[in-house]
Length: 152
Length: 362
Image 1 (cartoon, chains in turn orange, purple):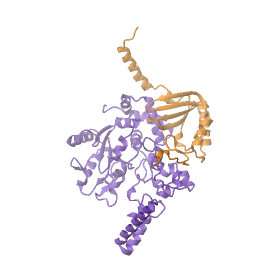
Image 2: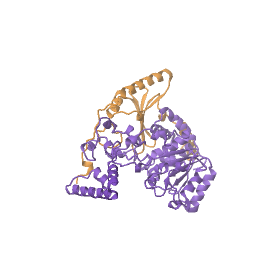
Image 3: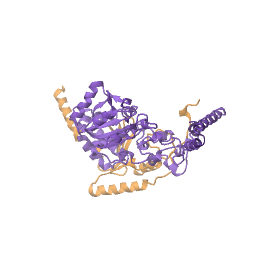
Image 4: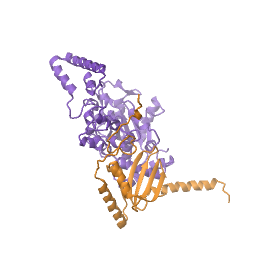
């Protein structure tokens, strides 16, 4: 008997989200959300330059066909910064080709996508060193200096 | 962990960095369909929240709801939040049993009177109390006694929320939901058979952050049950284009078309399966090729066939009624025999058994 994973099934699923694990071919049914989204980014960038107001867009809340998401990423392009965070799973923070527009993608420890955001700001909050962590780090460093034998 | 710790302190003690916490808050806001501007609010409030005392009572249930929340395949921040609460009584999970377990429940009730969260899974029998007792206490007595000092009640699973399978016809135990018995406390229904683990945790986070969440007319949090499965289904465009699978193995099924004609209850079922999904976001029943059963809706077990399209009258019931008027129970038996015969004949001809064959057998 043929094994189930060897049976080729062509689906026409229009928008199986990333990480879904199903075999699908990209569907050409557009949602029409791409252009309004790009305009929202443009307005947010303008506001940030005007008055410094930070804007965050949750891409998970905007239905998009796979080809539209690809088009969005292609339109925004790749900028100068790419950072990877290891915090309960990997997160990627990249500045897009449009300076001030960041793409933040969170995965859990199993690599499943748990959130994707566009942030318009100097630097996304999650990249900054956190004061609370620094307080604990200071304590840890003090303990180290008190106990460690370091050559003078 | 200390009793008076905040959630933030408790998480930090477990080695969770603030970046990880911010990431959790971002993912939670996205899951609850909250605007991203709420992420800092969630982080600030949740971090300062005192660890709530939680008493979890299990009545007429299969333990599927507890399995759902505890069987995550990996340690996630949801687990950490679950660990960060003070779970003072859960007779499936706690080491203590008998009198010692009941003493723990009574101590938690006394110490946190008016402040603890009561989680209930399972329905409550109102018939003979002997149908379900814990430490010799009937379910109904234990529920009333524990609910009296609770700040709020979370009815987890369709049994606690709506009566579920124990309440299905003919409901031999006289099973009822929590809200049928308790009317003077805020009750948050988190139905599903079982509910999605992230939704159980999400409701807890929402309660700790913003207090009682906005509920729909069935007492379910709007953030998770505000949209139908159909609204968020990735197969929805096929429905809109009129492309349906007619059987489980036709071309439509293979191409992933809409399962409406195979009985999918997605249009009348409100839950987050289509977006949050199951097994760490891997899939949900429709993605696996099976229609939604509507398990987060009241009386889903008695709501007609799982395999009849919503707009189609239940053929088997109609036929059975016609025959019953004419010839009583004998006709029902005859239909069953004829259908079994048809099924056997189909098997002999190597024809595939259809849903109709299965429907008619009874």
